Length: 129
Length: 129
Length: 129
Image (cartoon, rainbow over all chains, first blue to last red; front, side, top):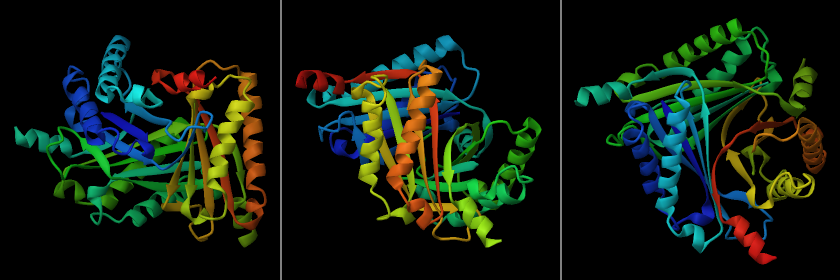
């Protein structure tokens, strides 16, 4: 499985393509992970932040996008480094010159966890084939 | 203490009883934990997700419910396995045939943490007795 | 970097100054950390919770504020204890007699993580000088 959560400050409304960013991260997980992330377990969501204070709180244009990934335990360290380097670069490229047009902090954190699961999305994907 | 957070995709609106699910998890923590979770420290909340991409992003009906639990450090491994097996089964049973009626991913993760606390709910509970 | 997230139950609307609490935590990180937290990396946000069940669920006035901090790995244990003791006391003092006026649970958890970053807020802060 792979969960990703994108937090973004509401002062970025209209400044970037949120749907495109959600799709990009899901596509990276599907297409660049050598099947490490089963397709049926990919869940990417976004949280719009309306209340925040950033840095010295002196600039209303300061903004941030933070991405938290949670995935199963046991993926190889070299895979993780390569995959998330690639994904982070893809997100940076997607945001383009937004970093020059305003003060913006992008961050990505990855944690591993095991849990309980019951998932019928896998059945839909199999049935479709 | 025991915190739980239920994330759920907004395309499940009306498809399940959110208030009932919140209450179920709180009740499991109160009634099935042999007092491992003090009642006054139980805090269960839900986050409605309006922006998400799931799996191959080809099915608007794909949905997920994810439950993250945070609890104090040091509970016995056997307790944790038994309690969360039971709780996960109770959630599955609560959702009933929703898993057959649509493609749905349910997940549960548990982490342990110690922190700082100040809590007057315990006083209310004691005063009530 | 230092991220903080304040979760608060919506039944506290109007009962405390949310903007003030966000600013207080950012100010603590700027002014009380002996530059352990670079100013450009401070990101404090709040999430308003509209769906929740607390304790025995018998008191509509039960409320909670939960603060999760995520910061870089490797800060000294003595610093962490002293800084977060101070910050927690500052938050308690800020909330004042709210703990007596209603049943309220305040909590603070701290985790450490390393990740990927790209941040032009640092440039804005340097340019300003």
